[in-house]
Structures are given as C-alpha cells and as structure tokens.
Length: 395
Image (spheres, helix red, strand yellow):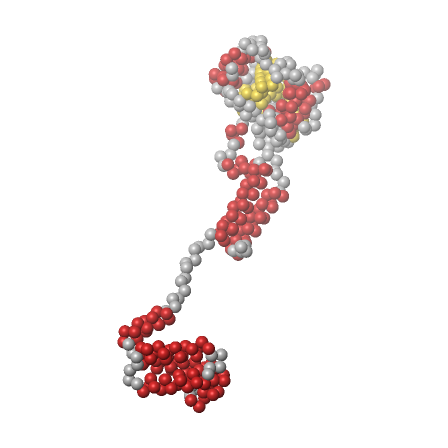
C-alpha cells in the first residue's frame, strides 16, 4: 500500500521534527538546584564530598546512609560503637524529639557535624546559638566570600574564596565560653564552631555550599573541607539523606521529570514518533467503510421469460413464427448486406455457405405461414428448427 501523508499534517510533522532537533542539539543547561545528595554530580550535589569521606578523611571506616529522622534511629544506637554523624543541607529542620535524641547521642561520645544555612528553632534553643542572615546594604553586591580558620596550625591559616556559591549567613548570639570558634569570614563573622556536650562534640558550619561539588573543585577550597573534617575523629560514618531539600524541588509533573533525564527524554520523543506513524498507517488501513454498490440487474432474461409466458398462454403460434422470420431477415441483412428475397438466394447461398435448396424451403414455408390464419405447434417447431439450422451453420 502506497503511503500518502495528508498535506494537512505537513506543518505538524515539520514543527515536531524541528522541536526534537532543537532539543537534541541544544546543550543541557546546568542545574544549580541545591540538593546535597551523596550520589549527585551536579554543582550543588555532594558526590565529591562523599568520595573524600570514603577515601581521604575516614579510610577503612564503615559508611552507612540513613534516610530516617533522628528519632527513628535504632533503639540500641547509644550502646553501639561511637560514630560520626554528618548532616549537610540548606535547612536542618528537627522536631523537639529529634533534637532530644541527637543531644543524647552527643552526650554518649558521638560526633555530630552539621553544615546548614539555617537550623530549626528547637535545635537553636538547645544549643543556645542562632544562625542568621547578615545581609547589609554594603554586601548586597558581594560577589565573593572568604573564609579562614582561627587556628593558625590548620593549613597555615590560608584564605579560601567562594564565588557565586555561598550564603550570607553567620553564627550569632552564642556564649563564647560554651563553644569554640573554628572559622570566620572576611568580616570576622563566625562561620564554624564546635560545642562540647557530654563526651562528644557538635561541629556546625553555616556554609553548606562549601561542601558541594562546585566549591570543592574551585581553587584550594578542598583544603578547607579537609581542615574542617580534621576536627572529627576517625570513626564509622552515618551519612544523613533524610534532611535533604529533595522534597522541596520534586516537580508534580511526571513530564517535567522525564525532561530532566536525557535517556527518558529521548524515549519520550521516540514514543511521539511512533504514535505519529501509527496514526498515519492506521488511518490509511482503517478508512471509512465504502458501501457496496450492487450492479444494475439485467432484466432482459426476465423480459424474455415474461413474453414467453405470455405467448405460451395465448398459443398464438403464427405471431411467433412471423416475428422469428422478421428477426431472421434482419440478421441476413446486417450480416450479409442483402435482403432475403428469392432473386438473391444464389448470392446469399455463396456468402453464407447454406444450400440454395434450404433457403428456398425456408422462404416458401414463410410465405405459406403468412397466408394461414392459424399455425399448429408442430409447424412452428419445424419452422423454428430450419431457422436455427441456418443460424448455426452459416459462415
């Protein structure tokens, strides 16, 4: 079957092909969404951070990824071996019971590391500190941020610069006697602290973006991350994936998710192509049913049968014989271009191949029938047989 695409589909097909080509050839834009996930290689993911934890900072130690709130940690967590708990997110939202369980873990001797732009009020009240945004008119146009350690023995007190990926936050309203300041920014605002609680410590940074892929690869900022984790002992790691901002950025549209994954996006376009071709082929194969038009009925046979019944009922054999002879003469005239007359029998016999005697007998019988008033059926049959003989044997 020859494929014929309707002209009305040409614009649609052209626009679809153009959109697909643009989508395939256009470079994928960089996603700057802060997510802090350990498996994410985007700029604000923590793939490199997890790699450093596994290979550089705590080699040989077990690493467990938790997707539960602190309150739902195993009941025997306190009696197991000590661990480092790492929380890196933009906002650490813990309920009162979560905070109580977290403090209990620290008091037992575990180490807690928190990198967050803000923390929940219950956690701030418990730690007696506050993380706040210190944006002023002077630093609204700030394009870079600097950090350095207050301990000169760490990385020779170098300065670490952050372009684009930083927060204008600081740790404020705290009791200097209850904690240790580990790092400040270029304005001497506190960025990194450590607070001892019971047998353990809580280390807090208000710059979570410093621990993402983008900043770890920028300049010498990986040394800053190394310096921060030098404050944690070499213990097994509990890496948190529950308090991440994932849910804040999940689109409600399944199509939006498909468009973010190149393989799924390509499969989606392939599906559109298949549906288009299916529409075209199925449209040709399943056209509207054409009604059957019956041919005109040949009524000649019915007419002949009707006439036959009419003559058979009336028994007018003479009329039938006269009509048959009339049709015979018309046959002779149209076929041999001569009339059926006695003076033409010699020429007609030569043309038709019928014996002259036969022609004369038929002629004489026809004249005899014409003079009679009635005709018997036997005479009609005899007359009919002579005419049929000429029909069948003439050339």
